[in-house]
Structures are given as C-alpha cells and as structure tokens.
Image 1: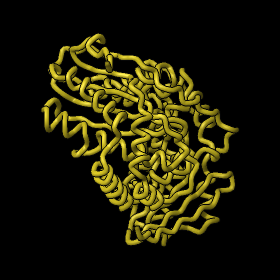
Image 2 (image 1 turned 45 degrees about the vertical axis):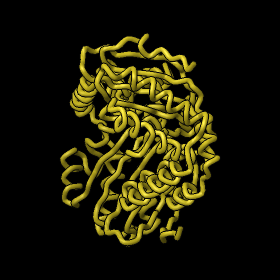
Image 3 (image 1 turned 180 degrees about the horizontal axis):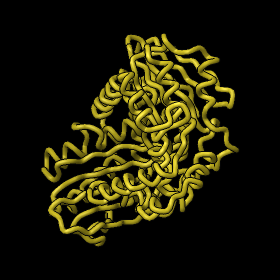
Image 4 (image 1 turned 45 degrees about the horizontal axis):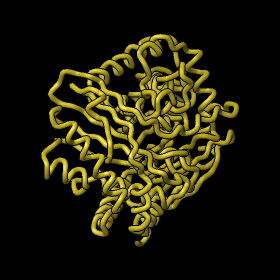
Length: 424
C-alpha cells in the first residue's frame, strides 16, 4: 500500500502535557482534542459516575469564558463543533473548526477545560440533567442490557460499573470530590493534546505550550486496577416485553501490547459479527430470521481484551439465537475462518479505517488511543499495513484462544435457567 503523506510531530507543554500535531493533506478543517486516561475505570467505588459528571461541568465556563453562554456562543461564532466523551478508559474534549480559527479554538478549549470554575450553583443544575440522562438510559432495555453484561463480565471491578454511575451518587457528589478527582487523575503523564487536520494556522510551539499549560499538574495519578479477567455468570433483567436484548462477552487470550494480535482480533471480530457478511449476521438474521439486529466486535483495553456479542430480537427466539451464537463461536474456535472470510474482513476493516481517517476528529480519537491507551507512536497508516499482512493462521489462533466460557446478560421475559449452557 502506498502511504499517504501524513506529517506527525510532537512537543511538550512546560508541565509535560504531550502536544501531537498530525497534518492531514487536502482538508480545510482542524480538530483540537485534549484527552486523559481518566474515564470510569479510574474511579474509586464511591466515585462511580464522577468522570462523566466532570465532563459535563467543565462546559459551564472557565476564566476567560466564564459562563456556558460564552463557551457555546464563542464556539458557534467560529462555526465550530464542540463536544466531549467519557468512556471506561478515557475522557476527551474536542472542537473542530475551519483551520483559520485555530488560535481562537485552542484558546477556548484550553480555557474552559483547563481552567474550569466548576461553580457550585451550576453543579446543582447539571446534577439534575445527568440524573435525567441516567433515568433515560434506565428506560431503554438495550442500554440496560449493555450495563448488565458489564456487571456479569466484571462484577465489582470498575469495568463492571456503569459510566453514568448510580443516581444516588449524582445526588451526593460535592464540588470538593469532583475537583479532587480531576486534580488526581488529569495528569500530563496520562494525557495528551491532539491537533489534527490543516495545521497552516497554528500558533508557534511556544504559544501552544502556553495554551496547553493551562491544565493542572497533579501528583502522580492513581493506577487503574488491573484487568480482572472474565467473570462467567448470567444475569437477566426480567421484563414483560415482546422484544429481548441479548449480550455475551468472551475473553480472547491475546497479548494486547502486540499490534499484530490486536489486528488479528479485529479481523476475527469482523468475521464473527462485524458486518452484513459476518457469520452471525448471515446465519441468524438472513438465513434463520431470528433477529433484526445482531453483531460482534472486539474491545481492547491497555491490559486486556474482550469479545462482545449482541442481538435484539423477538423474545420467543432469544434462546434459540443464544445457542446458535455460542455454537458459531465454538465452530470458529475449532475450525478457524476460511481464506475467503479473511480477505473479505480485511478489505472491509481496511476500507472502514481509510474512510474514518478522512475525518480529523476520527484521527484525533485514534491518535489518543494509540498514545494514551497503548503507549505507541501515532501512525494511522501502520494499522492498515498490519491488517493487510495478517495471515489466516494468526486469525485462526485468535479464534482458538476464545474458550467456551462467556458472561451472559439478557433483558426480557426470561429466567437465568433458559441460558444454561453445555457445549456437549
């Protein structure tokens, strides 16, 4: 594959926050992102939900832009798209603007994210907003199923808790707790700034250093609890509905620090359930008509990997679909994929990756994952080169590493006994 000319360079702000610049040819847009290894996995038990709540609160204003109207209005006058996300592994804030507005956009983002007021009055207002977000999720069976499978797979470990946290936590979080979490976890040693797209209008490195030095410089952050390994249990959220939401999690035994093994897992996930040509979709939906939605994908953390499967379907067909999903995983473990399946998955995964890298925001998110989660250099093209070189034997080895042990969760009119499993 011929490499696209992507210029990548890195510097540091005086307090040590890495600043990564990734020039994408042919775009007039620029994405500025700041991210930290401070997602829900970094929370203590009594803090569950605090990382996501903090994400909300910083948008209320900083020193130069002291009110949420200042933040929102300034972003809109730039024509910018301003947003954030909290995952298990990371919290990130980002804005995408026309490249000419680079200095103003960097000034805005580093002010309200790096120097937020976290005003007590605004805290109480936003508390109610996030509680409504939790209540909305609790009204959605698919969301409940996603939370339930995390609990089934990881129990009381932070990975087994919800990102939003329980409602009772949101009602009691204090400003001091929130600031303490931020000061403890938002460390330059566990974060980065990402400037991706058209870099023609960036301030010089000295000015960038001043902007990105607005972030705190806490003591060494607490380490995340080690990946716990899979808890094999079944949980059912009983509901009197016609539709069920089924989830399974397996643990592939790969070395997550090995880029080739991660790429082989990605291709395996595509073969299993990542596309309309996948085994799960083709057989469960197209051939058997068991479900309207079925999928499988890999989720790789810094120290462990999981394989997630799911389906949304008529409740009367849930058990049949469940059994067939487990059989397909076992068939792949025993026999491996075919050469045709691998080539189709390779083409699909590489094509999706190339299309994603047309977006400065997607490249920024990828860069944050490569540097913060895996401690690797930024190189979007390396992913494609690795996918293109993975052999059938490597994917078959990943498939064989998936033992016949799974955490199971289902929301619908079911009992745990319905999902008993004996491969023999």
